[in-house]
Length: 303
Length: 280
Image 1 (cartoon, rainbow over the protein chains, first blue to last red):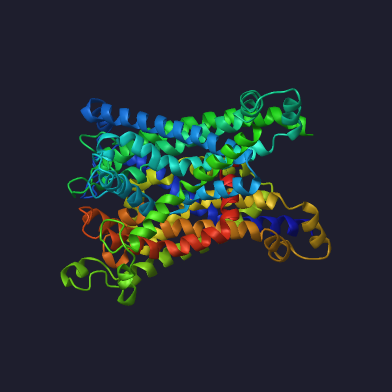
Image 2 (tube, rainbow over the protein chains, first blue to last red):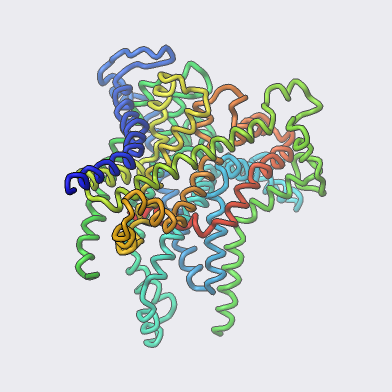
């Protein structure tokens, strides 16, 4: 009897867990290993494995575009992260300080850009901020007798922060506002009784109490931004000009699948990706440690 | 004094809440516009393509470049439904085992799923392209469905594990004491109890598949396998000079109908996926 129960347990685990493990190995672990292998080759459109050792990495170090790409990545990640965090915080504070129905509606409305297909969102933003006279904002300005503004041509970084930030800040707003809602109301009432202003309550009570949630969001969002390029690809595509908004992962995409079939430089593209994978792995292990440590510290209190 | 501040606060909140709705309103206005580039007048002429699915009936040359709208819509639906079915099925099983059984490698598995989810799989495009080419799945919808499903799966497992964790052990033990097998308890007791979680993941993965662009753009060449996202993007890329933006807007509205309906119906559930996915 005992043996059969042990057996049935193994059977259940086997049957129900295998598909997930197989998918994770086949489509996520194998490609990760394959990426590293490809980065050591000169794999191109002929799909021949020509091993070249660390040549691609040496090329990356001497490539004059590398500096531009790294610079663009830093600006993109830092700017979008700042927009997501700060604006998400504003949304969370605002939506928890008004009537709950309005607050819920507000967060739902801000979730909309995230739910819209990326293509439609990118197209809408390109039309609204188009540098041409036919762009929506410019047509408004011209109608009112003003001079058209070359929006995406001149203000390309703020444009990308807005395009991505409208999507990212919905996530931070939801995380932060649920954290704010879980603060015991006694603290805030007590502060009010003592005569604290709303500003003091926010800076002295609310922000310190949700600082771990903010830290978690910053950590998590840095990782996803390092590897995100869909909205840049759909809007400015690395331009305007010479590699101005070409972030590292977009550079890898262009090297592999760029407009011309002469691209298909899979080996060099994989080198870029490998660097990102290593950075991502190091960061996520560090975060894993930090946030698990915190959970260990907090658990006894809950007992 | 306090009154004025409260009114001001509510005014700001209403304006802020309306901001993300403005682009959507503009899209509808453009789709109904008589002018092909500017928002002017009110007409349904841009939706003419719904009759036959042909975008440029007066221009056979251009019509040949682009697939029929309904073909693209069917492909999009196939991708969305395939993604939904696979992600929901696999993650509802794996989430249960990870939540209810202790076995060797459990925390390693959970950690792997978390790390994989943190590093978006779009970074693997080069390797995935190679794998699909090697297996002959390049330029097929099945290949895109499989890749997409693999990418959405870690989130599904995490969210559903959270839902299973929320159900007290007593419920399951009661069923077992009554003589049900573990499988029976899973199907007849646990699955109905986590149906909100399953609904959340199904909704999320449907919308995720419906809106997918990068994988289709990278892995699909022939236009008969295009999805609506691909069709809209290539129209927009070639018509950016502003030739017929209103038509693209009308097509986008057609593309958005299921998204908006599901968003209104299931917004509450989508929020749960959003939070569950990052709780870690």
